[in-house]
Length: 482
Image (cartoon, rainbow, N blue to C red; front, side):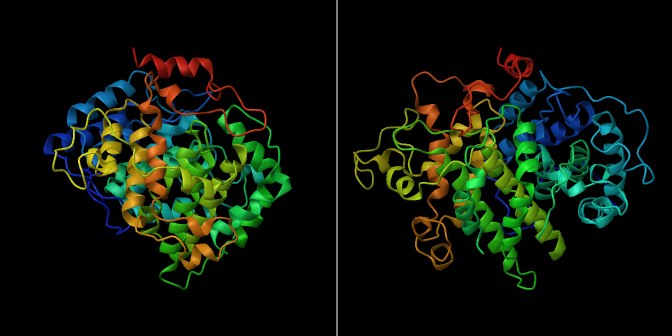
């Protein structure tokens, strides 16, 4: 039995999980510990019940803490988020094992499901709770029920731009059981799309989809739930076929690490290469950045699962990532142009001191004025008042740490069907981060939460840059800046 649901966060046991950065102090640790508990006790999972955007406060502040932010920055970030969050309210009735499936998808029952999952986690632990309430057959498919009546818990945990999985991943990575319970309750509140999570290199799947005319001229959609459901309803079976073609050998103990790496590279390509075009501003797509930030937790979650559940998770995750890529207009991947034109260094920045006259390699070198690009990129992330930004940089920095040494031309990439794959190397992640932060280098930069990320998509008829969030929700989110 778990005694403390809200311990101080700590480093993950998984060797592939991200590091915590220097800068953590007793004060910042006490601050984040208090925020995690306060957020669960006070706030609902959604801050707008119609549009259903998620409470990001814990994701945001945990990322800041792990990057070594001062406790004053962490407090300020949480205080700002609290200005628009929705207070938690009592559910109409309690949730038990008998009525577990009756209120799935109904956000009125978030508090009741949170109490239910908290009790399960406390009695049985996080791993058993996940196996039982996400991956077991009884919570996904019940014989005799119609599709729309199925509990489909794995599907629910992948819905809503993968926020339930992000929440669970935070709980596992940092060893905070209460966040796993909360993540399960987040999944309860999501609708099931009834996608078949069914059973080559992931790059080859991208290549095949790029050539598939069924995904040409994807219609634009503003509401994020419509983006996902439109593609799932029309192309869900086709996407499932592609995911089935992705090979996975459960008997090979090294397979899980290889497959996680494939998915990490796939999502970095979708966000960075897909968002880049020569002589155009980088498209910091709001939806594709969630593919980056959610990939960060694959190793922490897989590290506690059975092999069969690991495969289920990765195949489901891959299907969701492909659905979002296609749903946002299936941007092309000019890999050759990307690696020829993009930089691995954000360039000289005013906050860096002028190089010493004897600096290496020489005083006038760009490298001398910004010797390690990650120092500046992380500095940007710590102080930008945006709850997605530090999560994105933390994820990309970790991927660079784990995979940054990969050389171009290695056999597994070259053997895939993706044009230009032979050019992909470990600099993909720092290039992505430099592009991600590129807006900060402008003379006049709107740093409001709704303005930094692009939402127009990659459609033949682009949406307005401000699209994707209803005006009343924008008002709530922007009010925190005043």
